[in-house]
Amino acid sequence: MARAQTHIACGLKIAGKPEDKIEDAPFTETVAAMPERIPLLKARLLAQTGDRVKIGTPLYQDKQNTSIVFPSPACGEIIDIRYGPRRVIREIVIRTDENEDAQTHEPFSRRDLTRIERNRLVEMLLKGGAWPLIRDVVFRCVADPQASPAALWVAMDSQDPFQPPADIYIRTPEDRRYFETGLQALGLLCENVFVCRSKNRPGMDKEIEKHVTHFTAGRYPEQEPGVLHYRFKTDPSQNRAWFIDGQDALLLGGFLETGRFPVMRTAAVAGDQIRSRYVRTRIGAPLKALVNENDRQENRRWVTGGLFRGYGASSESYLGLYEKGIFLIKDAGERELLGFMRPGWNKPTCSRAFLSALNPAALPVDADMHGSKRACVNCGSCTRVCPVDILPQFTYKCILAEEIEEALSHGLLDCVECGLCSYVCPSKVELTRTLRETKQAYFRGRI
Image (cartoon, rainbow, N blue to C red; front, side, top):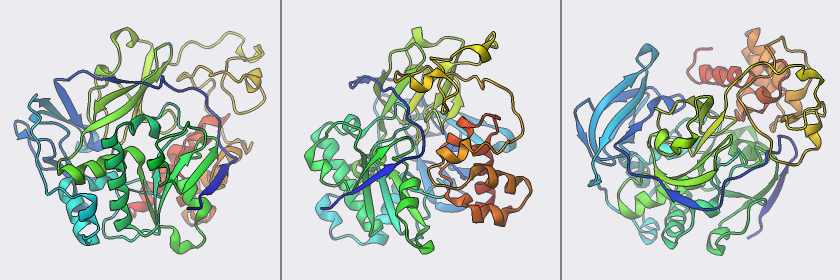
């Protein structure tokens, strides 16, 4: 098979990765489902405090499409349901049982999938709670099961720091079989399934590598499906596309082969002055169970899901459905004395203002903004790193002026929410947040 070679010149190069070995996380007394972490979801509870549930029992559904349900990541008793502002469901906490009973469905082998129709497969994935693993490229929400996408992207790796690559989460013959079954099922959902892998990662199983259609090279976010779809689509009719993470494709295949919703997850644990490593855990695991006690320092900020597009969390929070990384970074501290006069050999930067632009080593990351918010000065820093060429500063100003049609013409819906424009902005403008919230308002018909 001829494979596409793509080089993403924009973006940033970020160094560092955990040790290439996996540790098993301990059994935890509680796990939780996190509806608030699902983009654009309006959740409706299907269970109550005190109910006993099995792995795979539906806990909540999407109010906008009640056929989309989200399963329990554990067997046990629901002991708490926590709400945020406006009664948004934040956490459904389950006290776990060690017997791990699961709700079962009809299993399907790869041979069975050759005889199944698309509608039947969609029905199975919806009923078993595996459908939410497939997401929409534009809005990053759960894919519409009634839609017909122009393409479906399988992202096997990520340049977002410390995300688990394919050669870490596909290690056993069983992993390989589940992943291939997942790819076969995805091929029934969409005619154009593209599997992309980074050329920067070491080699992997040849049986898996033969499925790769696109090799990418370059800087973060070179593996982002939205970036790849932007580069390869040739017509506005191809705007609709889906994507799935490689590890989630493995879970999807495991669900089909076993008839049980798979809950195991390989996550990265990394951060400031701690030993970075991969951990074999489960969806919904408590964060504090994945981080050693010696690493839980008070002056550390917890981030889940990725340094650029993750969420601020606390040690009492849990691992969401899509989250595969936990990061402890130094919290914002005191202002550096005469910092403007220092050469900045160890300061991360996207410009040549500091000597760190010449430093090839992995640089420390902290939560300090290193300055205060100011007005946009049209410096063009965001434009230079934007991987989809949307001129973020002009799109942002169109949004502030409530000129939504003009913002759309600049390419608002092409934004992949990678976070780079906010990261590099010298005026500390939250460009990514503004673009994301505007896209969500557009999706909901509020603008």
